[in-house]
Every structure is written in structure tokens, then in C-alpha cells.
Image 1 (cartoon, rainbow, N blue to C red):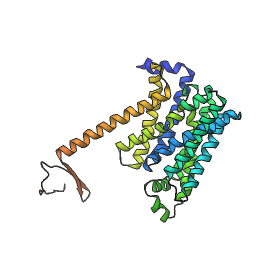
Image 2: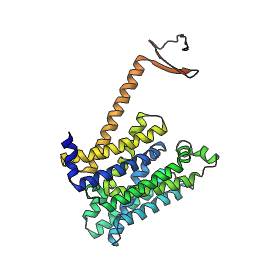
Image 3: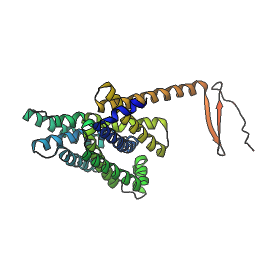
Image 4: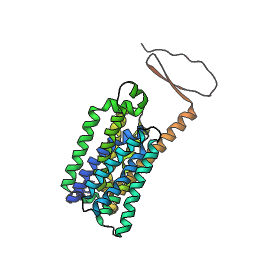
Length: 307
């Protein structure tokens, strides 16, 4: 077991990949909770595709792919926010228009130049084993910024996540919260491109948070569970891919999907058992009672409080 864990660490690129996986795990774990609770799963998928269009433009104009993708992704996020503020066009439609148009632009430009380089392939499919020290610094910086933003805007973002209409009534500037989140989401997606690629980022953001949602109804616990699951799948996925000689990004996502499936099945079995036994849970005066109902007919029962 010790050899299993230590052997991959002899290679510097694996150490860099694990470090990147931990940072991206924290990043995706935090961002994913907010996205899942607000029902915005499509925006992560959409912005990653929009970033691809920017990367292709950067390649053609000899600008750094990730800088170009970052600027394009940020502009796309701001444009989506601008369109939805008019209330006539909903968020899903705005995302569909802006992001698919950006991705189509990238595909059209590639078809014109008729060249597909390794850099563009990395943008599409990720290359976590090619992460450099400079990449780690950038990923770490974005992760730190996201943590700081959520720390200071935690209550406001929590309120907006559950009830944006009431948040507006209570004086929270929902539009500003949405804009700030769009910016940090775009930045998170850009730094994740090198690790996971356009095709896998959305899944890496959504799956850990969705798994955490199945495990708890508590917002605070969901945050920590999402981060733990995301970091675990990232690190474990790198080890599995190393020994199976499989694509690291895809392995990370598949492992996350496997954990989600197991939790989903467990929840289903637990729910069926509760329904079969007719377990009734309620409280009186702060005391929680569990009653196993033999049948569904009306019946009486008494409660005795403990001394």
C-alpha cells in the first residue's frame, strides 16, 4: 500500500498534477455548491465552451491561449448577465446563445486554418500532467481569491442562492452578486482548462456538489463535503490514471460520477426502507421522535419526556 502511494510521487509531473488536483478540487468544490443550489449547472458547461472560442482566437492572433480564453470567458459571462437583466430573456437562453456562438466561432476558425495543435487539444481535453510551477501559482492565486470572496460575501451569496427575490427586498444587490460570481466562475474555468479541458470542467464542478447535496441538507456541511469529495476524486483519479495509463482528467470525472452513483443508490435504498417500514419522524418540544408505523391507518400514540 505504501509503495502504491509513494511510487507515483517519484515523478515531478505527478507531484505537480496532484497539487493542481487539490487546488482545482477546492475551487470546484466551492463554486459547485453555489451553482447547484441556484440551479445554474448549465452556466459552467456554457462558459467552458465559450472559453474555447477565445482560446482559438488567441492561437490565431499569437496571444497566450489562456489569457485569450480568460478575457473571452469573462466578456461572455458579463454579456450573459447584461442580457438577463432585461428580464425578457432568461439565463438559460442567454447562456445558450452566447456560449454556443463562441464555441461555433472557435470551430469555424479551426476549420479555416485546418490545423489542430497540441495546445488546442489541451484546451479541449485537458493536460493535468503538463502542469508547471507557474500554472500552480496561477491556480493557487485564483483559488485564494475565490475563498476570500466567499468568506466576505458568504451571507449575501447564501441568501441569493436560496431566495434571490427576497434578497432584493432586504437590500442585497443581487445583480452585483451575480456579476461577482460570474467573474470568479470565469476565472475558475480558465485556470481549470489546463487540468480538465473544456469537455470535463462542467462535470468536475457539478458532480462533487451534487453528491454533497444528496448527503446533507445543511448548507455549511454541503460546502465542506463538496470540497472533500472534489479533492478526493482529483487525487484518487490521478493515482488510478497513473496505474491504468488512462487520461487523468477523464478518470477524475468518472471516479466522481461513480461516487455520485453509489450515493444515489444508497439514498434510494434508504428511502425505500423508510417507506416500507412507514417510519414517521417528528418533534415535540425539541425532542425528536421516531415511530415505526405498522400500517398507514390513523392511530394514537403518547409521548413521554425524559426527566
